Length: 354
Image 1 (cartoon, helix red, strand yellow):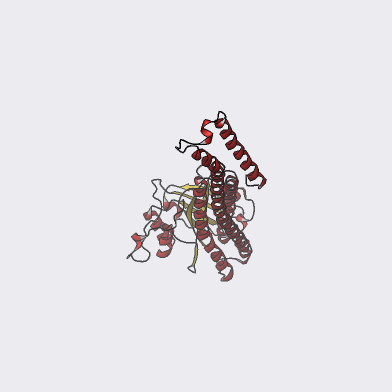
Image 2 (cartoon, rainbow, N blue to C red):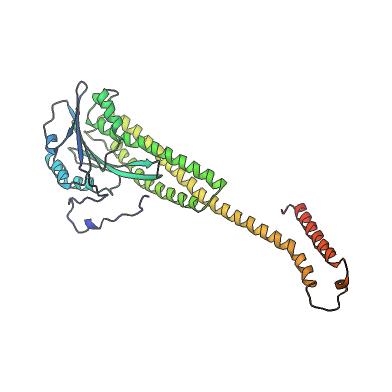
C-alpha cells in the first residue's frame, strides 16, 4: 500500500547535494546497459564496470546508458563526475521521494517521473522513481529496479522500427517518458477491473473486507494523483519554455504525451469519485440491512405481543377463573392465539409491511 507520508529525517542539516539514498534497500548489484545507435548503426552491450561507459561517443551516434539500481552511491558519484552532472541532480536521483520535476541546466535537461506496476496476485500498486538526463547524443536513465517498461523502446531500437533511430537524444528521452505514460493506462485498466469487481461485490454481498478494499484503493488513487499530476506541469514546461536541447520535431510528440497525461489524470479523478460513491453505497447497504433486521424483529414482536398478553392472563394465580374448569379451555385458548396471529400476519401483508 502506498504511504501518504515519508520520512526524510536523514537529510536534515546536510549540505545541498549530499548523496543519501532514500528508498527501499536492495542487496542486488546495479545493472548497467549501454545502447549506441544511429539510423544505420546499432550496438547494445551490458556493462560490468561503470568505467566502460566513459568512452567518447562518435559523431552522429546517440548513446543511451541505463542504470537499474541507485543504492550504490559511489557508482552514482562516478557517473556524475565523468558527465559533469550537478550535485543537486545526483541528490535528486538517489532520493526516491522526489515529485515529478524538470530542471534545465543549460547543457543538459534533468527529468524525474514516477513509474507504476500493478501486482495481479496481491492487488498491490508498486511505484518507483525514474530519472532521465539528456544532452546532445547522450541519454542517461536511472531506475530503482529492473522493469520491463522500457523493453518496447529497446525493441524498437533493435529492429530499427519507428523514428527512434532517425532522431536524436531528445526524441529518445521523449520515447522513455511516453513508455512510462503509456504504462499508466495499463495500470489504470487493471485498477478499473478491480473497481468493477468491488462494485459487483458491493451490490451482491458487501462485507467488512469490501470496505477495507475500497479504502485501500482510495489511498492508491491519492498516491497516483500526487505522482502523476506534477508530470503534466513537467511536460507543459518542456512545451512552453522551450530549449535548444529539444528540437521542434520532438515538441509535437511531447504535446501528444501531455494530452495522454491529462487523460490519465481525468481517469484517476473519475475513479476517485466512483470509490467515494462506493463508500456511500456501502454505508447505505449496511443501513438498509440493519433496517431489514430490525423490521423482521419488530414484526415478530408485534405478532407475539397479543399472544403474550393472553397467556399472561391465564398465567395469573387466581382460584376463581371461569375458564379454568372448561374441558376445551386449553384448545380454545390456543385456537384464539393462532387466529389472532394469522389475522395479524394477513393484516401486515395487506399493508405491504411484510
